[in-house]
Amino acid sequence: MDKIGVDLGGTKIEGILLDEKYNTIQRKRIETHQENGYDSIVKSIISLVSELKVKTNEEVSVGICTPGVIDTNSGLIKNSNTQCLVGMPLQNDIENGLDHGIVMENDANCFALAESLLGSAKGHDVVFGVIMGTGVGGGIVINGTLHKGRTNIAGEWGHHTLHPNGNECYCGKQGCVETYISGPAIEKRWLEITGKKESLQSIVRDLSDEKAIKWKKEFLENFGIGLANVIDILDPDVVVLGGGVSNIPFLYDEGKKIVYDKIFSDSIETPILKNSLGDSAGVFGACLITDDHY
Ligand SMILES: [Zn+2]
Image 1 (cartoon, helix red, strand yellow):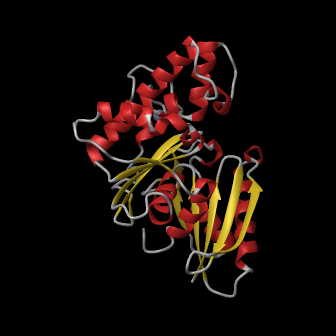
Image 2 (cartoon, rainbow, N blue to C red):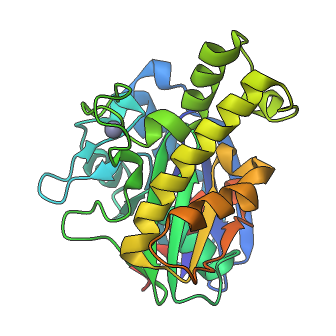
Image 3 (cartoon, rainbow, N blue to C red):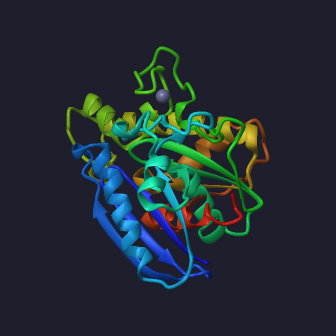
C-alpha cells in the first residue's frame, strides 16, 4: 500500500506520496492561510490529499500530522498553538470530506517517529524526540513504536512548569518550558534584555557582549533544567532535537553539558543529536503513523 502523509503547520501544509518502501513519488507544499479560518484549512487538506491520490493506482493510507493533541475521548483538537483548530473535529471533517479513513497525530510525535525510524535516532531503542520551534513539544518512541500514553500527552515537556509564577502561557498555566525556550520566547526575552528586535538566527550570530552572555546563560539554564527533568524520568538512549531552535549550534556542546550537570547521575552520556530529516520529518512521520508503528 502507498502512503500519503500531510504535515499541517502554522504557515504551510505539505503533502507527500510514498511507495511501500518510503520512496517519494510526489510532494507538494501549499500555504496554510490560518487567517481564512478552520473551514478553509480543512478544504485545503482535502484537495491536497485528493491531488496526491490520483498519482498512484495503488490503495493508499492517509496520515495527518497536526499541531496540538487529539483528545482521546472527544476526538477534538486541544492544546494547539494554531488556535483556529482548538475544539474542532478535524479528523472527522477530513474523513467525511475524503470519504476515507485517516490517522492523525500531533507534530512532536510524528517528528519523534520519523527521526527514530528514518533519521538521526535510527537504531536506538528508546528515543525522546524534541520539537523546539513556535512551540515546544516532545514525543517518545520505544522499539519503533510511538508511546502515546493513557491520555495522549506522553512527552509533552513543553508545558512542564519551569518557573512557578513565571511567564503566562496560552495553555492557562504560568512558567511553562515553552514560554522560555520556544523561538518566539527567545526573541521576546532577547528584546527585553538587549532592547533589540532580532530574529533567532541573527541573535545567535554574535553572543560576545555582556547582555548577550546574560541571555545565553539564562536560556541554557532553562534548556538544561527542562531537558534534564525528562531524562531523569525516561532515561532515553538518545534525544533528538528538531524545530527552528534546534539550529542553534551551542545546544550540542555547551547545552548538552548543562543538561548533564543537572541530571541525577554522574555517568550520563545520553547523546543529544540534531535531527537529520529537517522540515521533512512531519510528512514522513504522518506516513509512518499509518503503519504498524502506532
Ligand atoms: Zn503551557
